[in-house]
Picture 1 (cartoon, rainbow, N blue to C red):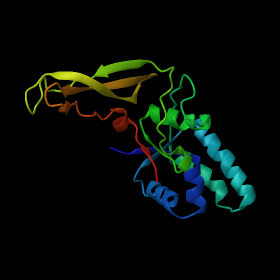
Picture 2 (picture 1 turned 45 degrees about the vertical axis):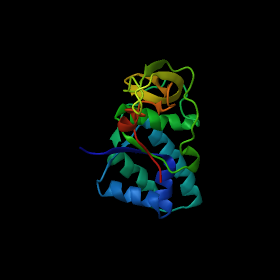
Picture 3 (picture 1 turned 135 degrees about the horizontal axis):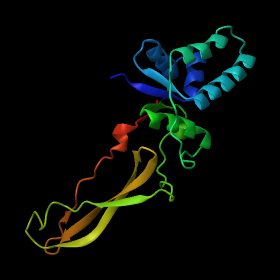
Picture 4 (picture 1 turned 60 degrees about the vertical axis):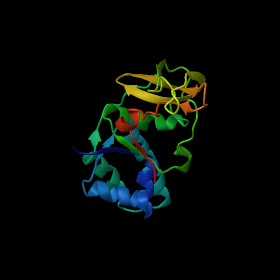
Length: 199
């Protein structure tokens, strides 16, 4: 199976003008180690930024780079998001492209690295409760009482809609010996479907 990736504009530009991880990513694309996917809005952004860079750095090769990208990339029809999802609305176009495939998004901006912010409130929620497997204290057999819960949210992506899965893992404590039991944390399927790579 061919890996497909969406390259953020800063990765393309950095890979053309400087060495380092962005250059290695473009080299991997050149070596056919992954398939570059683009949409018309992404291509237009590449074109705009490359035009700006050509004015600052008039290199003959810059005019042909866009042609190479168009020729050797997979043009996809983006998924239309209902509203702004990314903290920078200009980044939504990359998410829309990745959701259409799915594909990995390669982004080198430090500001884009994960920040634990709540998922947007307008997205529908589905609550899933995962009680511990134990019905009694595993140490002494005593009765378990509700102590609290850990709650985490993940974005699950389904065709044409988003929903937030609210995962609730009740904490139970033994009434006799105070042993605490809880179900193990679950990894979301969205991490398997859409990976965001950072370097």
